[in-house]
Amino acid sequence: MGALLEVENVSCFYGDFQALFDVSIEVGEGETVAIIGANGAGKSTLLASVAGLLRAASGQVRFDGALVGQMPAYRRVAAGIALVPEGRRIFPSLTVEENLRIGGHRRRRGPWGLREIYELFPALDVLSGRWGGTLSGGEQQMCAIGRALMGNPRLILLDELSLGLAPKVIKAIYATIGVISQQGTTVVLVEQDIGQALAAADRAYCLLEGHVSLHGPTAELTREHVVAAYFGVR
Amino acid sequence: MLGGLYALFATGLSLVFGVMRLVNLAHGDLIVLASFLSLVIVDNVGWNPFTTLVLVIPLMAALGFALQYLLLNYTLDSGLAPILATFGLSVIIQNALLEQFSADQQRLHVGSIETDSIRITSEISIGWFSLIMFLVAVLLLVGLQLLIRRTRLGRSLRATSDDQRTAQLVGIDNRTLYAVAMAISLVTAAIAGVFLGVYTNFDASSGPARLIFGFEAVIIGGLGSLWGTLAGGIVLGVSQAIGAEISIGWGDLAGNLVFLAILLVRPRGLFPGPEPE
Picture 1 (tube, chains in turn purple, orange):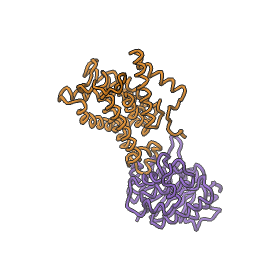
Picture 2 (cartoon, helix red, strand yellow; picture 1 turned 180 degrees about the horizontal axis):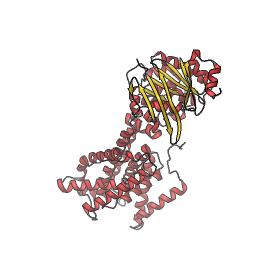
Picture 3 (tube, chains in turn orange, green; picture 1 turned 45 degrees about the vertical axis):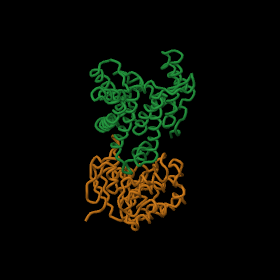
Picture 4 (spheres, helix red, strand yellow; picture 1 turned 120 degrees about the vertical axis):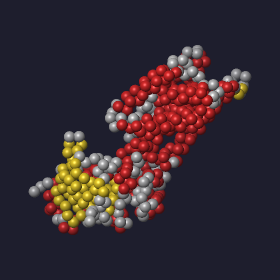
């Protein structure tokens, strides 16, 4: 047996600064897993090392049993790992539709196509000819999720979905995670906003200063445990 | 009419700058290299210079791809290194050309079309060659514009230009893409090189002057807009022509003065692209 994603004892550095210390996580096929933690806990670094934007200094990343630690990011996309980056990162000089189409640059077979994305986010259908740089935060977030889905990933990594968005918009976007998961896609979501993330996920990991401070099924995590692991109070 | 050609130099420069933030100081020398390539084929095979484009274009494209893939890609992540590498390349090309072809002035000949002209009034006439050169440049710019706006490759180029980290996240292999961009850039250099070789004399050290005109056209037109680049090229070409009309030595000077004047009045160029964030 093997999980879809296995991160084993990964350590990452930015120059001299160590952002992750021997972090291990496992995500099974079809699961939705939340990674929570305060600002600077290493959540985005962890996603970057899984997506291939950052090489781990030590430790291993396995995807579907194969070592992917040395693979450049663009090849991991072809293997089925998609990252929706923090800050959305929509291409401003591409239209909404081009942003989506470019997400299918290395398309795998699967349920998601332009039409399905427009069904999931009807707002994008209306905006399809607009330049990416002119979208509101919520529209950008939908577009970024759509762009990642266009590649038909097996694993989608969502970084700080709720950052800077209105509560109503956050709720609408979180509602789509269920739909994505139903299509068989494995979801890893990184959040500072604990409530939303724990409600959407089956299991959760909490990072604190580059270490895993707590993990378990979301149903079994009590609020006290989470608060302690999140802020480091004992 | 020379403006079209300047726009062509400029387009090659700005494509490479836009996609990989690389200032290619060897661009002028690569244009001259293309002129010499054409000359070698003319001398040895006896083709018309225009026919040599059949060989010069693919050779320059292959050179661009190889140059980027095997050399410049390794310099891109380290600050000043890429611009120094292209400067070194510029010196190498100039000296290799000097070694091979001496410092003599050369010219490509295409026969009577060089001097034939269409008479519009008794005062004004347009040379056939100038007209062809201008039309080719405009067609090429239109073609490039379509390539960038409409095709999958163009979409990847724009995305990488916007944000190369995120471009990798959608599966774009940026290093190969850079090499393709450099190949396209040198296709424009090949065409510019052959036309310029017919239009005027060239020698091993005329590259840097070509480079300056290219930069001036980009800046007059405003960074990031292809039509601005064409306008910039035309403004530069016309200023030089008017300057040369007053006194033969004033051509380049007039071009440079107009460039400085525009830089003073409109520092971002005549038709700037979108405001950077």
